[in-house]
Image 1: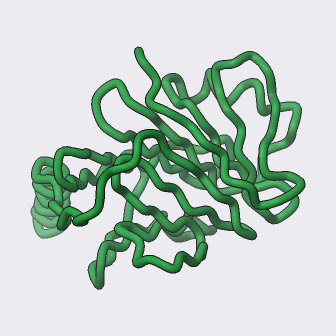
Image 2 (image 1 turned 180 degrees about the horizontal axis):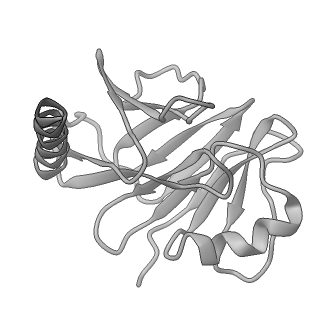
Length: 190
């Protein structure tokens, strides 16, 4: 019992230490574009914002992504990969990354089902994207803004592909159902 308690304390401390010190990534040489975009591709998506490139759930990019995210599946936590390093994101854990002056915090939160959702927070009072791991019924779309307060966009699974749902507008207008056109967005002033 004492050994289990010591192990639990060590794991807790390691999680706190990992969250306290953000991982710093190299800055690209090109200019950072204003605004961002999300392009759905099958069950995944590519997210570009403030110099970041994130590949979600198997989306493939011509450029090397800064972060590769894999949603939770039954019995397994979401995964985050930077370069050759992979991190598990158990429920309620957060991982912070810094690239130049741009910050990104990725948090595993309880999803609408049994699987954790990922919340991508691009810095103080900036843009937030929530990525539930499982399909959500269309009639529940309006409830997402209440369940994830402060999220600006939901990247949802619908008919085994990712679609984008802007949150907070009062309308449940989904983008990306017909074709893989990028959804463009800009910083939200809070």
